[in-house]
Figure (cartoon, helix red, strand yellow):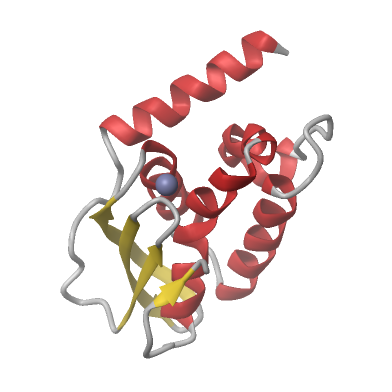
Length: 150
Ligand code: ZN
């Protein structure tokens, strides 16, 4: 299990250092701002939809390693998926980060996002890990006000 945690930590550190899709998406019709006041994480998520498929997605912002890595991996995970598939993935992810530490992630369903399974041991970090996902929801639903985890 410790080898697995190390591997997961590497994935998170890599995404923090070299975040994917870290840019402004000018063509994005959907965007939302998210804020986690507890940690100071701030993020903007941009989404370009093609029907109900996420054609492109990106983010900008500043925050801790967990929030940035989570946003980076979220964009990788949802690109090309339908809104319904993304909802399902969001529920899987949320259940995973709020479950008990001894529960194993359902890797078949969450894929690389399993790297965040260990977050459930650190309740204060759950908000860091889920901020990007809540902000994505707001962008998809065109919520006009900034999202806050509080
Ligand atoms: Zn944070």
